Amino acid sequence: VGYIITETGTELHHWDVRAQCAPLFHGAAKVEECDKNGSPYGISGCAPDTCLEPEDTIGYTLTTASLELHKFGVTAECSYGYIGDPKVVKCSGHGKPYTLDGCEQTTTTTSTTTTTTTTTVDGVCLAPPDAGVAYTVTEVDLEWSKFNVRATCG
Image (cartoon, rainbow, N blue to C red; front, side, top):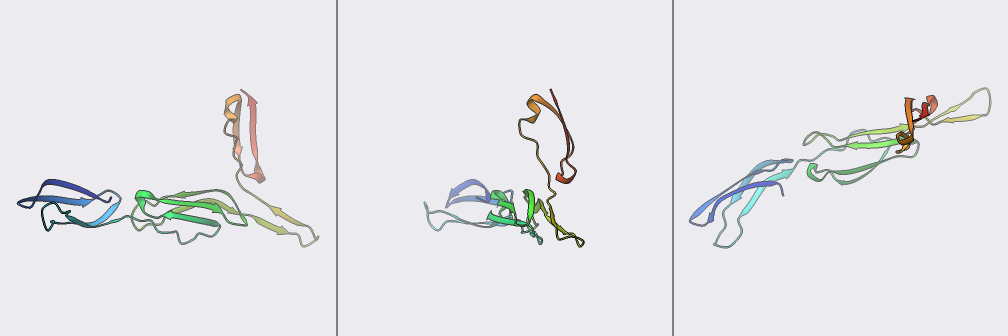
């Protein structure tokens, strides 16, 4: 993993093995000839391209399986006090941060004229997956506080 190898001769008297780093890997590939006939040659110098964690992860609970681009695996959930549909987008290249989106902070408003506390949760509603089968759905605004969706039998 990580190398593209071209072998045109692997015998001691006819040695010609070349390598380069595979896509999603970086470095300078180096091939070392084997010591004796029948033994493996050495290859080194390529490392996987990796994403960095973003600087601001507030509002997200992250689980990281791998930051290597060829097997990138990061999942996110909204942290306590945040709601939404979290999304993780793999970085665009080695050494760049991946991006997080989708979690919004819930807000709490306390009235100073009464003792009533109102919690406003403003997130995005999602249509059921089969909504377009029997209905024509017009989504004007999906935020909870401004929710505006019209459906007609279709």
